[in-house]
Length: 335
Image (tube, rainbow, N blue to C red; front, side):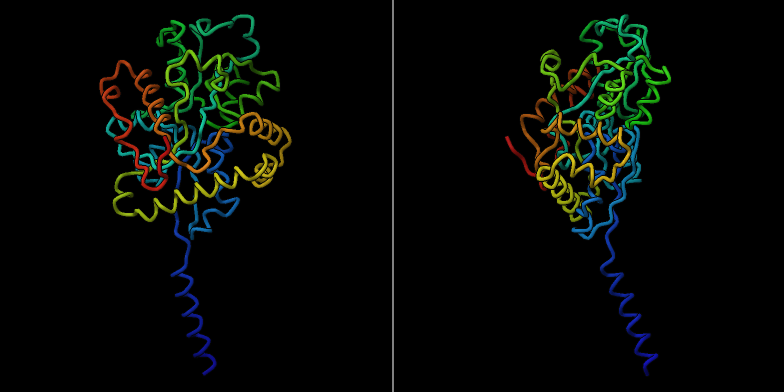
């Protein structure tokens, strides 16, 4: 009798654990430890996914366009990418819908190898040079590449007069490209750019955090990192979308109520150079992240201006209305 009772209890425990097993959600994002996408790295570290009964799996990539490709090829339920990159995919027929904002400010830096400081004084000096950008795909041009092209054009540099190469979106990829001399300049990310600058390996030619830079770029205050999904997930699994937005919102709120030191501690970063560069970047850009993941109507308009300016020669891109690909049902909207 005791053996039968034990067997029944074991079956009951097994059934109960199956019922309450964490729901698996897969999200693809650039990184790791890229400051623009840091909230995604932090989710599991603070247990925001477990609080919603979710086990989050993160697939890191070398660019937002690659993350979006993981989404559309159904290797991921969600992606995090620059809104202009998502618009590029949408203009090319891709099924992508923005559901929540991650950033409040785009943090891109056009950095140049330090040994070229006497030769590269302005953007036009990049003619004939090799420039690295976040990795694009056939159907989606990364925000980094769109920005690099816009900056080059702003100083009369024809795109066919430079060579664009993929730079990835992690410290290993971007630093390797600079240190090996494989690229003369990179439209790179923080905290990698500042770390290379502090090591004396690069100097900044353009920094989107600098008001003097942004005033010459149309749509420079565009919405950068955004959580995206597919329309079939919204239609068939709206509860999954709701959970993802709640998870992101809880993480953003946690970040807003904790210090840079607490954020870096929770990420478990112990390597001194990486730790100090990320700490410095978090303190340098205190308003980098959205407080609650809400969309801003004014920022969406700025994003549309940026995208249409960078895509002036593309009729499909020019015809795209950003509101066609934003679903603010869960994140909601502010002016």
